[in-house]
Image 1 (cartoon, rainbow, N blue to C red):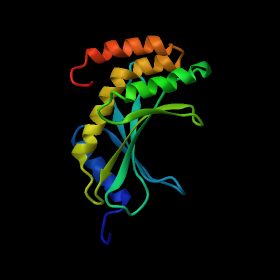
Image 2 (image 1 turned 90 degrees about the horizontal axis):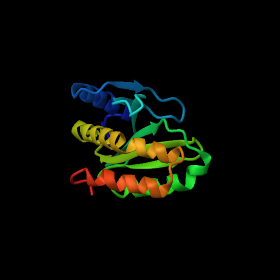
Image 3 (image 1 turned 180 degrees about the vertical axis):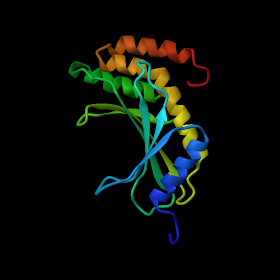
Image 4 (image 1 turned 60 degrees about the vertical axis):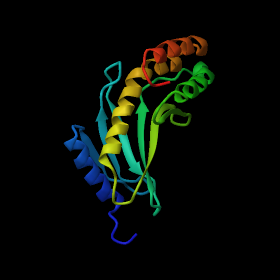
Length: 173
């Protein structure tokens, strides 16, 4: 598309619009195969650890394109909890209105991710703001239980606690 803003220009513009909405942002310029990325501060987790949402465009000229929102979570994963963690991530994801949790084995990282289609040159800051707010809610609500499962809490007990948690949230299930 001739004259379309570059992904970097779109991230710069998005960063400014998110700052106008009260989010602290930082633009990190890409190098080699690593694309430009915009980081937005989220509320700290239950252990008061900082959380950041990484926003980047998938490479390619497609319109609509995709912007990925990714949050790496600081959860230590006990080697014996992998099967329960994988099952539990699926259980939680089935109840989420936006995005989903996963686990990158090679990086040993639990994450939350959401991909949004966007038109090139017209990234909707309101949509991305919604994703940021929804991610904060999901992480603050389910993060402590996910971390407990990663640390060894069994699937059955975690599922029982999740059910009780979901019953207390109107409209999520």
